[in-house]
Length: 157
Image 1 (cartoon, helix red, strand yellow):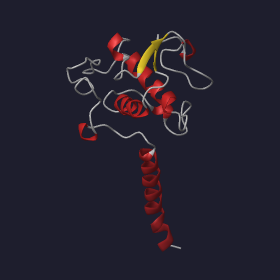
Image 2 (cartoon, rainbow, N blue to C red; image 1 turned 135 degrees about the vertical axis):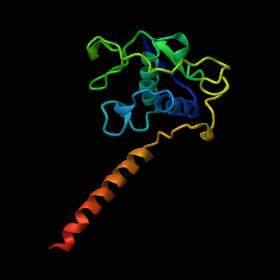
Image 3 (cartoon, rainbow, N blue to C red; image 1 turned 90 degrees about the horizontal axis):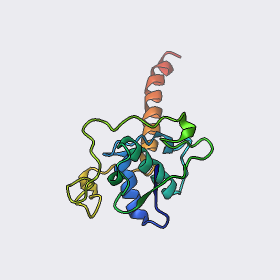
Image 4 (cartoon, one colour; image 1 turned 135 degrees about the horizontal axis):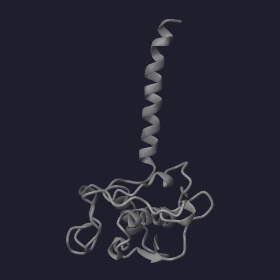
């Protein structure tokens, strides 16, 4: 069983779900980062599907773990394709992902799981943007470090 983003879901709600899954939800979103095997630029549904499914698999596949404020659904069809292998896929060696990290509980409406049951929260609730800015910042830090390390070499030449 897999958890995927619903066709035609509101893009803002998909983005909020993606942000939550990759942030507070502790989904492993490495594969959907730029350069990753599942990165599909400008395909929010594909990115959200990967993150939703990773969270769902880590949450012991409970029915409430695949809702994401009404933007997700379960399916028996493996969404993996090519080099992009979804967690829980038989092409990933047949073993599901590790269990949920300790202290992580599935979404329960009205209990403060993803918010108040009617939304995922606001930027002040700790959502982490997933728009490539983090990757750009990482590259900028790396370039700055390389420059600072190379700078002393210019004084000895």
